Length: 280
Image (cartoon, rainbow, N blue to C red; front, top):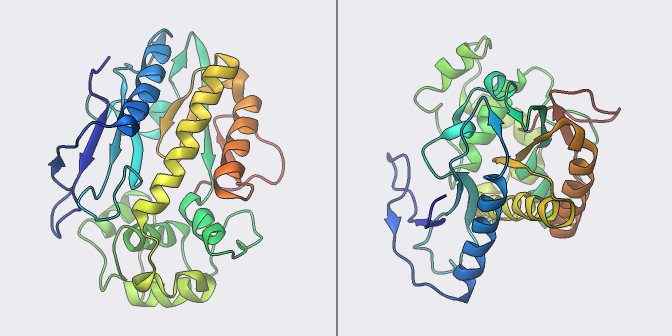
């Protein structure tokens, strides 16, 4: 397992894929954060995996050069050695076994949007699939949200590779679906995004809250139930037999940290009525 489990990166410079690594001064806070990840690594390394290799986890914090940074921006858990199982295609991850048992993925539907609505005291649209907007393929809606929430303002054009990604996903991109045309439709559907360029809440704030929910759920499953779980951004891989308990604990953690009940989706097994489609 890795000896260093915390990483801090500076804000991303335009045109670069990620911010530069930063050194940080150890403190009581970093010791506690490190201890939690190390605890999970030692626990998870005791299980037998098929279809993947578990090389440990690290927690990556972003925008370490911001004045208000105090290990409160970003914070997602990643594989310590490259992309690992997180970088696998979802259909390949579905073949993973933990101690010989099939797995499922428990997803938080529209995680960032749900957190943003909660922070602003607004109500989420009451529909199973919040990314489903009449007249637009949901993959186009997802791509718009991904581009917008990863930037400080609205995009003027699709990013390099976006149209190829949509094509690979089997989505036909019509000529009229410019970023501005899609933006108008999405903003009419989600007024909460209209002031995105001026909002103080950024993607790194939303990601931190999400990461606290995910790690909190993993620690609770480990400490209270001795059950393994693996993070994949806004979802958790768990053994199929642990599905119901994982849903219960993830819901409790989300409610305690965000203030509202999340919509969850199970990949790999049928889930009760009222579940949502995969997150935006």
